Length: 510
Image 1 (tube, rainbow, N blue to C red):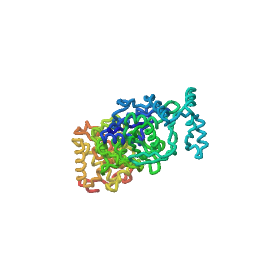
Image 2 (cartoon, helix red, strand yellow):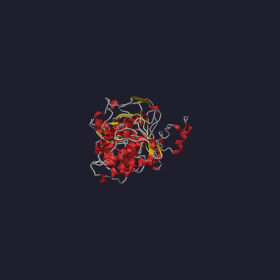
Image 3 (cartoon, one colour):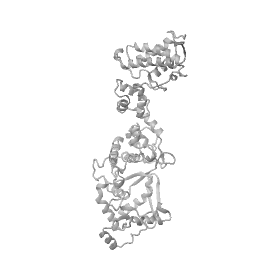
Image 4 (cartoon, helix red, strand yellow):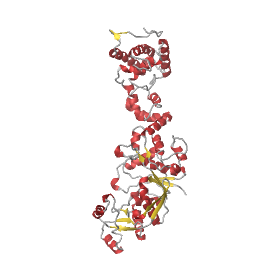
């Protein structure tokens, strides 16, 4: 038997993490067993539909690589794959159940149903339908239909006994039939309810595995009774535990929790998101954590699914994202980084590819880029306290002398590239007889104005340009010169503007 799964979202808004995880697991169950993955749009709840939500579904599937084998856009032998385009069949199937005595017409008004809630001992929270219309004769039913009275069709639940179903994650579950309400199958507007339509569609589309959230466990006995009423074989059920914000709260957009689109906008790469979501409720057999989609297809096993709720840990996702960025092919990385670089730097003569190469191993998310490269465009305001660094054994005085020594060396370099800059500065360290940090820290601070070590010197160097042709060289000299004035103006370490501390070429302080 061919394994067939379906992702059947309702177009009601964004793609939240739980929805995407369901789609991913359905895809992996099918592909790990050589089966088919189907996309079906369940749009029977017309009131909750959101304009553009269908596009969100398609875009998400495309971005994540969850390519469906059948669906509204590509067709298939069991279409149409949009529920609103299948409307004619649902009423026919509902009437079939009426004829079998497994369902019945209900003409109760909204007001009467509300009164049931008010009279119920448990209050309005829950009140089972009292089967007021179950006792109507065929003649009474027909008379009401002929009169055009609004109606719904309800499923007739057994009066006694139990219903048992098996779930891959939760095992065998048994419920008392007396606890089941006579649920509505067809609404007064002629649309089927979700519970009815997806049973009919799953059967007609030969779906073998139904994957959904554990909140649907309570509805599954009703689904099984529908399958039994029709004489159909029920599918394999796979109910997934909730994805949690913390130990006590589910992920919720209302509480500011991230959707898939939010995570992409915040600079997380799609592959990392998919990888992380795959581990929210599934444990691979080994210790591997980083999986490509292809590797997930090869390694996924339903036996690894957990019944324990999964907590969405943004720190873990961020770590995984940084690993993906580090390992990414550079051309692919640059394609992602370039828009961020251009957004931050605007029109510039800087070599963006060289900046990207330096960034790739340092990023957690792509959205880190603008903040990390701002200083290339504008030197931030900073105090001379940055020049004092205990570990680097430097202070204002040492910084000024080091920068004054470094400027002519850098201005006179024949070749302006990372290697020559590094070699020239290290040679100067030897000439001055000082620690590496006593030169490199002041140079880094003067060029970036940043308190944290982020980049090495020569970070935006051009290859082999002559001094007059090299704007990067000019910018370097300009920033070093500005730092002289800053230190002289803001530091109190001199007598009448004369510096008491400098280096001789032999490195002796005087």
